[in-house]
Length: 369
Ligand SMILES: [Zn+2]
Image (cartoon, rainbow, N blue to C red; front, side, top):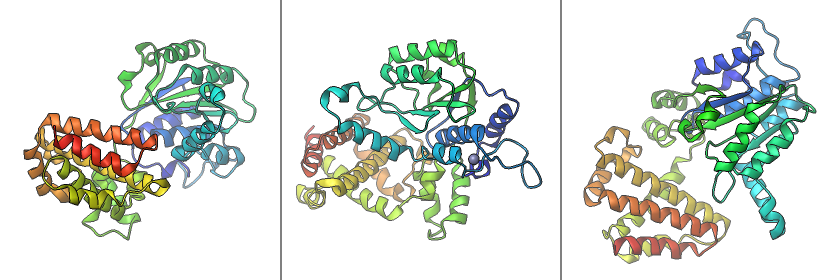
């Protein structure tokens, strides 16, 4: 997947590739931009371009800037980190299998290539922790074994305080052979002293019109009316839009509406029970419940947008009328309490409580308040 497959944000991508060509890629750089803009994909592509063993030769049909083949052993191994969610799940599962004493000491890291270290926020708090930065400090001063340039990619800007301070020490004396990439949705989360030592590159969200157009080209299975809906539900994330399973989402959303209406006191318990009894334990049930929770969260966000009088930002555009009537029936406080309740259901699910029970108690708690 060379750079021409990276959609959107051409000026920023060009700027980064020009820096790479000139040998001036900063030792630390921040890729800043909204979720879904492609920050992580771009970071991985940069690591591939810096280390490709058979880069395409510049010539007709190419833009003459550094690119990568995608098939050599460096490209392949670095590219294995692209599916970040799966890699993180594997790392978490591996840690779960450890003895308790080792579990506490083990930090989540992804390393599909010996010289490319991906550092995601460490669960359950989902923060970058000191133990993770210590591993970076140990690795980064080592001369790369197989890469020309080593990369360390932090996938979140949410650092614990001592972790941020430890990173700052590395940024003060970065080794020549390494680049540290920080991905940030909100650049203000990073210490000013970290920001001032890094080159900052900004990515914008991909406009929904551009995603709709791409869906028209690549998703022939969709009806024209479904494209604008998916483009909005994908929140500017192209990958998510292209693989969006609309029928699964609509089924989950129908259940989420029953749940929320019940929590609003607008339907009786038997309707809710019919829904929740279909949510069983086990892996399949967990996935189904996650889908329901995500759909419910997106409805709550739309209700907030309607109450804030920004209806043009609503994502569930096929439900405008129904959402408008729900919005008049709830308060800001209620929406906030419901969002909090959903997060509790989610964390209860992670601890393997009975799913239907927590969904029912979620609704009961809100409708009685
Ligand atoms: Zn290659």
